[in-house]
Length: 114
Image (cartoon, rainbow, N blue to C red; front, top):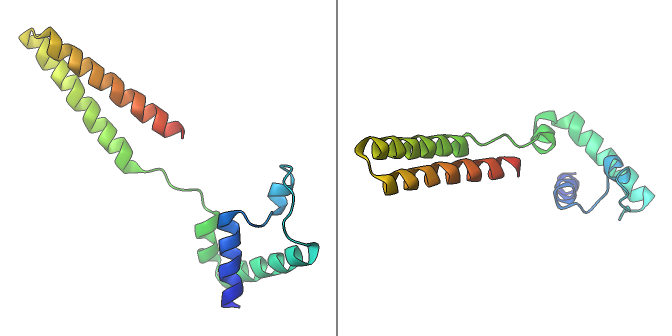
């Protein structure tokens, strides 16, 4: 049944078939009842045979730490530029630092929600 397993995973990832969860959202099934029953059998056997493999597809994607680290470093650099500019008395450099800090926070916040 390796071919069936690949077909199931491809179908799940591409949205070709409609699961019980999707029916509640008003989607129409693209598979016949017999095909849906067969698919459910394949899924249950796959879950029984290799639950770790199935969990890879069921799990929610993990948040990326790299984006948070880059945003934090960029914010620290922008605040440092602003602080140095204010100590030196350079208003244009302080404005650049504040704009950079605002842009960093704005980009981080918009990417975080999406």
